[in-house]
Every structure is written in C-alpha cells, then in structure tokens.
Length: 115
Length: 140
Image 1 (tube, rainbow over the protein chains, first blue to last red):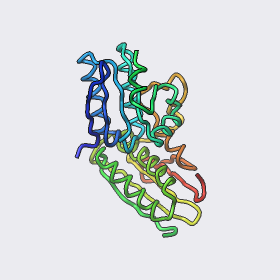
Image 2: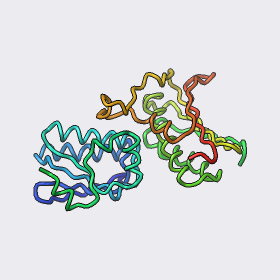
Image 3: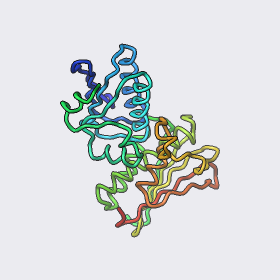
Image 4: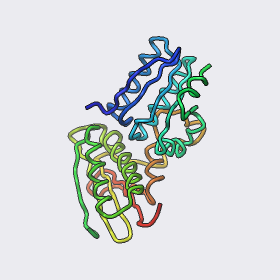
C-alpha cells in the first residue's frame, strides 16, 4: 500500500491535490515532490494541497511542503494549504511556518483566494 | 516495567524507520505514558532514527541503528545509536531563524528537543554516536 495517495482534481485554473496517508521521508515525500514537479511542467501553477486526510508528517514531510512552496512560488505560481489537522498546525507552529503558508479551513474560500 | 531496557537493532534503510519508531512508541505506551505524550515520543524517535540512518550511517545497510528504551519510575529514556563518525549538534543551523525558514531540511533536531525534556549526544565507547532522549513522567 502506498504511503501517500494523491488524487488530483481541477477547480477552474486551480489544481487541488487531495492527499491521503503520510508525508514522511521516503515514498510519501517523493510522491508529493513528483506530483508538484509534474504540475509545474504542465503549466499548472495554482495548487491547493488538501491535508484533511494526512495522518502523519515528519520533518522531511514539512521540508517537502516547504520545497513545494518554494518551487511553485519561484516559478511564479501559488501554493496554499487546506484543512490542516491540529497536529500539522502544531508542527507548522513549532517550525515558525504558519505565517509562511496561506492556509484555509474551507475549500471555497481557499479557491477564491487565488489571484 | 521499571528500569528494564529493551534494545533493538535495525538496518540502515529508510524502510526500517517505521519499525524502529513503532517499537519505541509501543514501549512508551506500555510504560503507561498518556497518548499525547506518546505522540511526541513517536515524533522525536522518528527524527532520531532518521538522522542515524541517513546522516550517521549514510544509508549504509551494512551498518545498524540500535534503539534502547528504558522505563524508570520517573522517566522514559530512549537512546538511538549509529555507527557514524560523530556529530556536533551545535553545527546544525536554527531552522526557525528567518534566513533558514525556507530550507528544505534541518528540522529534525528541533522536533526532538520540542517533544522530549532532555536531548544529549555522546560518543559510544565502542564507536558511533548515541543520542539520549528523556521524557519525564508528568511533563507535557
């Protein structure tokens, strides 16, 4: 069973990645990285990561979220987070990254925030 | 279980990190620590084992990571030993410093120090580096 399953859907010009599983060193982090790199190549630069079903993130997973953010942002795009669990919020607070990411609790508001 | 040490050995493969973390976490749970504390121990042990596999042993599968768990009345002590050449924790940049915030790595030790009460590194007399992490009972 894959550590991280990613389902992709489109809402206008925003790509939503619904993630299910763990974003940790190894397979999970690689899956996220591959998905974001592929979207960049396809010219899809507005990305919303839905973390509602992400059960576990380690420091490598946090690093992968940061890498995804910098890859998209440096490429002129936007990457935002949706449905942070309490645990993930806690980890982003510990790492002082809460103010770096735009994060939302409902999809409609998140989608409207993309410029 | 009081004063008893569980010692487990794992190969230096990323795939073994889950097994090592699960074993330590289960020992923590059996020692009677509450679930929110067990979560923090899980996070800290995962980072320590990852560092041992990736940095200490360079993902060399011929080298092992040894995880020790000792439950005492007052605290749970977890050790993670690698076979590496040594490590200076003061050489790791602060990941919460603004100039480091967007770096892709370097947050593992921060998690270890956040979730455990004490974290110390020392050279093992028979070689390798040992990180000793302590969680006192009753602390958050």
